[in-house]
Length: 199
Length: 199
DNA sequence: TGTACATCAGTGAACGCGCGTTCACTGATGTAC
DNA sequence: TGTACATCAGTGAACGCGCGTTCACTGATGTAC
Image (tube, rainbow over all chains, first blue to last red; front, side, top):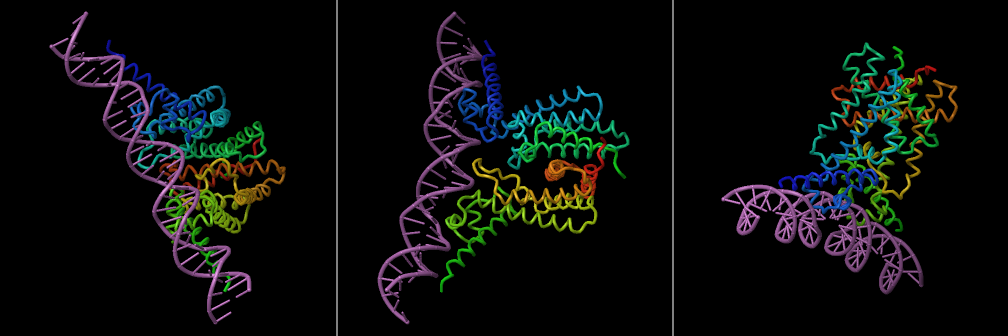
């Protein structure tokens, strides 16, 4: 009859993580507390610690799932567009949409500052590289003469610029701008970034 | 002999605020604690509360000073450049420089999320408008046909994009990029943003 | 100029709360014979 | 198949710490006469 314990353990781990994701989604990072998670998952605080050494690791696990979901949406968006410029616009818009309809998950990605000692987890770095690669691929197609260093830098610049706009939008700093107009403005940003350089 | 009490009171207020600014500068927002401030200013915790109702207001006061200092540097930078494009580049670079050599003060501006109920202070909003105006003035000169709504939006887009790059840079996300190259890339961003639109 | 009282600046121990983390304990499952 | 012991999942009260905030108190300054 071996296996019951393992099944229970896996099930608990799953439920704890699921509860944490739901909590982040519904109430944000500051609601992601051991007691709340345990309660939502239907266990006691001690059980949570049987699966995660501390709350930081649990938050990281939630953020990994968020990144995964976001990357999936971005990949899908890219696949639907036909030109490099359209793909870049789709990336930017999808990023904005993700931030808007998963605002707590999205904020969680940036609000969580590791307590100093801990490293940024490999998984996150990989996802980050994957995102930059998505961008870089299109930039390279639009501008084949870019060397790989410039391409890496340029990809980051594009991501940073779009991210800045999305952040401002999420903070309500684009006052009085309708959703439609905001997307147009995001398109504008992307268009300008890939325009042939002046010099 | 009236006036000794008032002088003491003003002096204490000054020292408390000064200590808070120094603490933010040297150790960042998370070090801005009542006991640390009181200690640095040479008073007890009770005295701090005679001048600020809670720590949030004190942080806001520190951030106001930061914004003031930043705006002064930005204004000076603008005054030294001769063309709209150069002025925009100077704004972006100065913003980056400020973030770099006052990193804790700069981070404090964005890390401090008010605890929900409190409004964003008028002073901060005004400084924000002033910054957008600095940008808008140059954009209008470069593109006189922009109506005022578009100009307002475009100013925010430019600020957001530059802010995004500066944020990424502060997080070390422009890996392996020298300071000089980073500034060049920031110039690139500004140039692209003001390039004549394609359509 | 002096006296009596009121008001103010400043003190710091103590309170309170949130919240992550620990650990001795219980009952179920697994294992050895 | 049964028994005895070991191991594991799960519990939740209690601990500990950080830190903002309060408040009764002290001594200096101001005011009224």
